[in-house]
Image 1 (cartoon, rainbow, N blue to C red):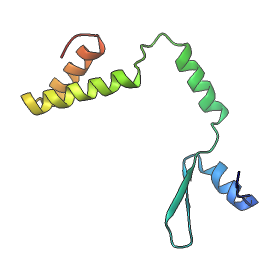
Image 2 (tube, rainbow, N blue to C red):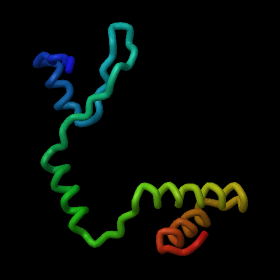
Image 3 (cartoon, rainbow, N blue to C red):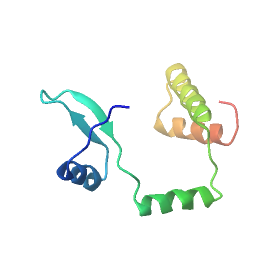
Image 4 (tube, rainbow, N blue to C red):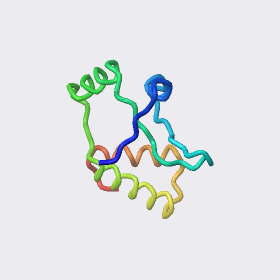
Length: 96
């Protein structure tokens, strides 16, 4: 597999950024995005959330909630408060 070896300065930029870093060619075109490794604090937070009793939703459920919200907003002209109330009902398992 082809690969590129980064120099020390490039590594420092990636790991000290704390966020996704864009890799660009000399003309400024984006070639890739590098995601730095998670910090120990981020790993601990993920573990804490997974260990909690908070309700979780699959990506399919989230997409369905967004679709139901969008349809209701377009059909009924819901304001923000009404949309939030509908979202809470959807999350509770009620039909929109």
